[in-house]
Length: 243
Image (cartoon, rainbow, N blue to C red; front, side, top):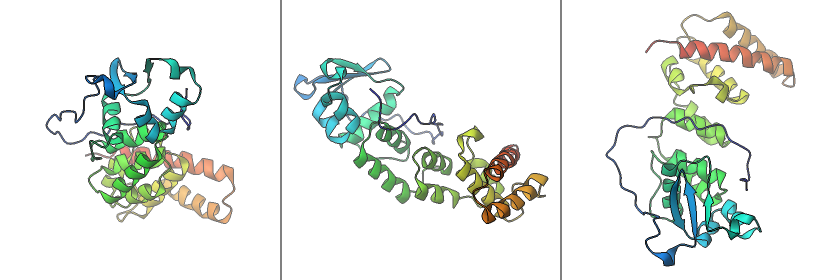
């Protein structure tokens, strides 16, 4: 059984400020047998849940339980490539016992997308656009993974200096798609004090010329490829800046 969308890039975990350990709002431990009819196993932990409740919010689980798949006949189903902690957060939001928070929205958004929860996805998007405590690096990563252009714009608006640029870049520059790389590069070239570093590099001059050529003929694949290569070199220079 697979989700609606293709495999996403692995989520890069962004550290959040240390907070006191928070107890789970609800324990899906099966203590009341009247409230569950399926057991989902995530990282060895069993979550006792109700099929109809999950299917109401998730087309993925609706198809799994009522779409004629063999999982519908099982008493226990293993959900792979998900952390038990993230799945707990997801279930709490789905069941309406917890609201989204700055520290949980990334995990809930990713799982809502994987499990095709349209209502929860809209809720995550609204939250991200309305709140400013989510790190720009997290916002940018989410915008790329979920093709969320409004969030990408919001993230890039926080980049005012070369240090902001360094802070927003992912650990692996290959996680940036070409459109985002181009936006970051243009942002870098427009930063007061000059580009990614105080003196423009040959790469930056070349890219400025390539952008001008690309605007004249945006269909040139060779130009797009060369911009991508030069962009990664420039972004690597930004990453190498000192603290």
